[in-house]
Image (tube, rainbow, N blue to C red; front, side):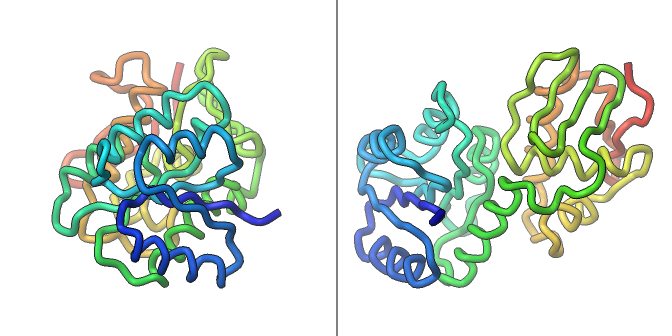
Length: 234
């Protein structure tokens, strides 16, 4: 089945260029010029990934990202690749906090966009999650095949990227990992200069799986180094 991509972008020339490139690469492509029509399209058609511009004529991409994640159906789990202004890390941080799976600064090369799309979809499909099906730490259960996380049987809401981050550190429980090592384990490439995205995602994961995210017991910060996932948990 052809992967379907929706681009929500008010720059028609950019959307035309991206659409031609992605169609040539074997993807289905649709374009909406504003947030309202993009949300409507998402609820009426099958979409695997949204390329979402930060600046839209009727709203901003952050609000659209938030609205997508607040939907009640399967659309809420649609992968989101946010397009942000180059050199503006705060927008990227907020976007990740609201549930975006990745970001790409403008201007960008089509090949980099395609590589990001493939990486996000690969994480979403779980094609790199071989090994044992479930990881269990006390009341925390990570089902790698179903790509679900629960605490005491209660489902935890994570993006596909956050799920893979959690799996990466859980597989290495008890080991102190730098941000570079965590990013390499998930993306298979070196960490970019903008590494605060890891901290943002870890904060979101803690909010989902910790009893008290302000006093975490599962994901611990090692100051000046990175993070360690606790082997022994209640």
